Image (cartoon, rainbow, N blue to C red):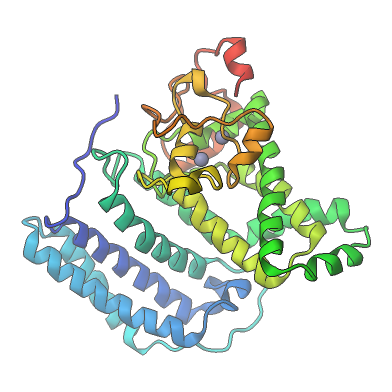
Length: 380
Ligand SMILES: [Zn+2]
Ligand SMILES: [Zn+2]
């Protein structure tokens, strides 16, 4: 039985306290990026923003740290979080937070994606915290449930190691298909209208991901790794990050193969990445927003929550990440009206808690203490 932690409500000063700490911590991290851009920012991501944008963001972030801290001081009897947030804000200023300037960056071989972590975390908080507050699916679930720290570590590591994952993801595609002359294919793709190109990128990668995902469910040894992703009982915008690196590496590598072969334009590729980054978070979010008729065209939280359903009779459905029609074609589609699963997680598995233990565990042990019946297994 999981312990229920009291959900934060607007007006208590607890949300503002948490936001003040988050922004204070992100401001300190941003300071590192400004001071040591070679080590803490990624060349690909630096193309996306300008020095002026990040300088303004830094300024706004520090001011907002204090404002949210003050709101929390006023409304919350417990002053701890507000004090921590304000102290982080003061520390950022003392270390030069108001005087930061973007500068030319020397090329280095390896860097940590701290800039990607800060900006993506900020974007996700801005998008999903209000949605989960205003339109929650599970009204009792707190953002600060028992495993939120573990999920945040998954989020952090996968972002910080973005360059390493990028290099590894591309290797299989280049090794197997690098010898082919793909110029004609690339030429053909580049002449397609942008919308068609984007749809093609989303569809072809989702088609490959569908089979990779299904393979992870049906192969016993691989299921050990993918089941980590299914182990969360508290679905929310951070929960989808809980993915083992073996799962990330294989799935992304396979998904990258058609993108590599077809050679999409930089614009299409960047829009594709942005869409996937937001959409993957959305489908795990704790929100009842269901997008009307769009839910038949594109996957929604309801659709993917059914994939995470804890009742074995519904296992083995909704493998597609973007387009439900792929599940329809292959007989794995399940979307019963406006019904949602009772619970999510794995009732038949026991995973150790924490990132490091979960990292090692699937290599050595099977998390399933009671083996499922063969017919239930084959459904995964
Ligand atoms: Zn799955
Ligand atoms: Zn998922």
